Length: 156
Image (cartoon, rainbow, N blue to C red; front, side, top):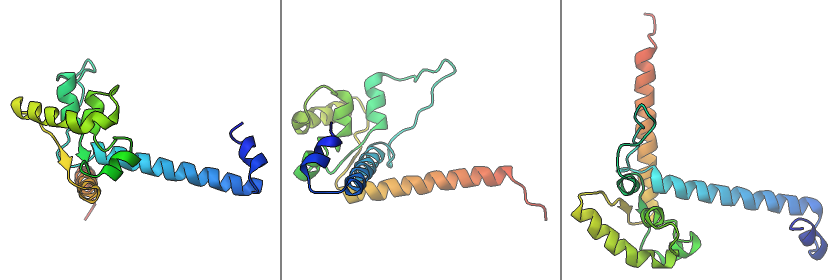
């Protein structure tokens, strides 16, 4: 129905519809992928490995605090366009709470993090988060390169 209806009511060809459909999904996928990268793969976040039994050895809430980050929290536009996903810490801790409450909740979460010596990772802007993500990718790439270089010996 969602495919047939636009073709029936809009003055477009089938291939224009297909190109728009693909373009929309590419844009949405890129946006969501970028949002989740900026919320999880930035400087300061942890990447804990499970133990031999496959368990993460820390409390659930501690894990959320150590592995997620917020960005552009002062931007009302970012909050609106991303549906609060720029506040991943609060989203992970309170997934069933509407994102319009995250700014108030974040004050409590920050204070609690301070009291329990937990990180509260936050980039002030989208660009700052993007730069932090780039530095993390560079760090991971360098670590992988060094590991691979140590395994491969070039004959002299």
